[in-house]
Image (cartoon, rainbow, N blue to C red):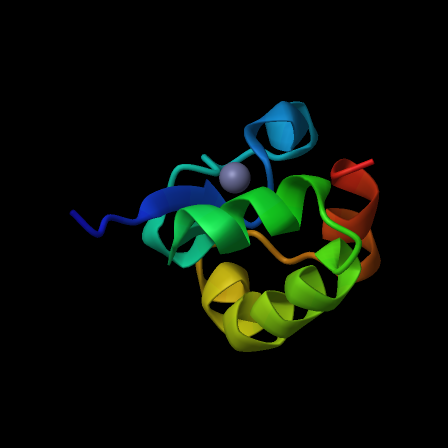
Length: 77
Ligand SMILES: [Zn+2]
């Protein structure tokens, strides 16, 4: 049966850097298991993060999670 997994563009291990919760809709992204694995462990990780960042930068800003592209890239390392 097909299913999706919830991914946080800004990972929860970065919560200490923010005054607002990372568990908000703007930060949550549904991914298939293959893409979810790729964004955490794959060689195309940075490309996927950048694509998702471009889509979510504005919604994140409205949720008081104003981050540059460089920040999510650093949090995954
Ligand atoms: Zn994830």
